[in-house]
Amino acid sequence: MMTENETSAMPRWVRKLLIPALIGGVVGYAASAAVLRYIDSDAVGGLSASATIAALVGVLYAVIGIGIALGTASPRLGARFLNVEDADELREQKKMLLWSGAAMLLWGVALLALALAAPDGPVPQSAALAVGGGGLVIGIALSVLVYRSSDELMLAVNLEAAALSYGLLLLVVGLWAMLAHLGYTAAPQPLDLLTLFYTVVLVASFIAVGRRGMLTIK
Image (cartoon, rainbow, N blue to C red; front, side, top):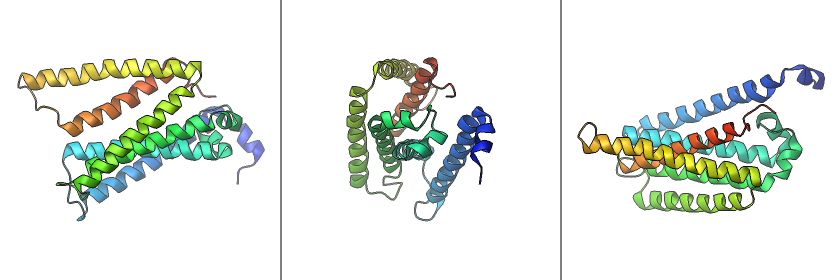
């Protein structure tokens, strides 16, 4: 077991960046591999490319949400892999981070349920609609609570991420729609659009957080 002296001697970038990245990569890979194995199993029999990509994005959201929730529920543990100064910072933001983690998890489960919906998948359409719609709406409600409890810095980050999301969606979906209209490519499927919304929001959030210097190792 690593002693306190060994831990303090370890470079901060290893403890706060490399090790968490490796753990996250292993967990994400394991979760994605499990979903792909399930999709290819006799229980599902394979899905379209759109549904498979949507399922993987849904799993990514769920893994991130669980990581945030676990790290916040146990601040001493969370301080080891989340980019915060110490456990006290997590305690101060506990309510907001728990809501954020729960919203990410709900959105991930919602997209996964829609990806596995019948007729191609094993989830009945009515159940997929209930889980997908419920997860989306409740997740949005939680994000509103997060927004209202955010400090000035996080409010600015949220607004910047929203503006970036709009611009990126207009660029990606607009170009795709243009090419499809002119017959150069197939039009996006509804699930493609939903997956794009999920992906673009995540990318825009990382860009906004990075521009504010919040990805710097603490």
